[in-house]
Image (cartoon, rainbow, N blue to C red; front, side, top):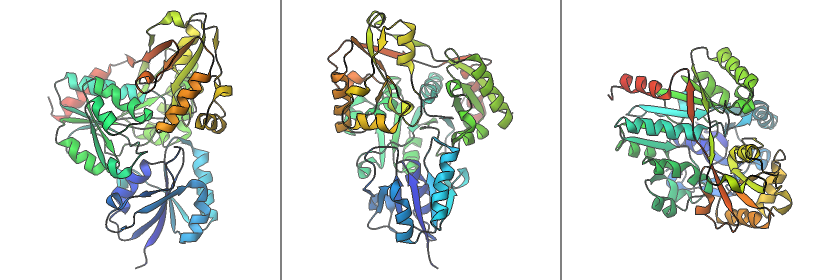
Length: 443
């Protein structure tokens, strides 16, 4: 029988997972290529034979997404599988139109074909958009479960931007492990806070191997999702975070709306800084598509270590990169606290942007006087530092989840802005998790 030829469109995450769990050993299909977008420098690689399996002794090429029409014709492709996250629904259909116009089927893959089942209870924490507060929620969920005396392991959504052979599965228990695996800023932002809380983190590329390794040392697993993607594992409790600063997005972005429709609990975060009308709009949208979901409200109180460096001064605000870029947020915690504390000016870094940082501003035109902390490798980290050095300011406000001073030297006065989840009710996260633990028989 002739094999069905497939191209998987992705961003070095969901695309690899879909291949591993569905296509790798499926003799009915031949994946002829991946396409890549969103993340700088992840294309023009090979998905290696060590991961691709015996059906692909030479591995699988990874091409820039703009080559998709040519690749469809060159390989006589039968199906294009869309496999990345946090894009508008309209965007998905534009990609579908490109595939269909070039003569091939267009496909989305769902939970039945992509979710693996854990041998231990599993809580998933996902979101409707990048930057909703999912990471801080994951941290709190993991810590609360650990405080109950359970062995908790977090498994983080993939960020395999380096040598894929070295990232089949990775275990992070200390800062030494971050150095060992040469983690990017984006990876450190997700792993460091868990490590600080005494939580072991697994990540990588092959999420069945990762799951089986994690199960060996876990009473319960927390799936720490990425962007607004669906869990890779079947959750026993599914928690989704929504952002009233982008009210309405919960019904207009893929696959965030799917998360919302299938979740058990929705946490509407940032209600302390959002317009109350937008909070109500999010609640209405949740009730419209998932009336069974429990709705919790939460705040993200912001604290700074040196408020005196902000008041009356010109500040350069640095925020979490993915939240600003494909999360489409024009600001973050650093900007909010700078305004609250009376900065005289938030200096616009765009005229001083260097290298790929300049290209980031050209691609994401919604960005204003904020510096996104993109750092997908040593070269980009160096370009981020150069941009900071060039920008004239009295102080630098670091609003990123990790302290950037751990990965670069900043030769200017710095202020660290931090934020954590504070659930306001009507029930507590502790009560939700207590019910889950009792139901799972772990207490």
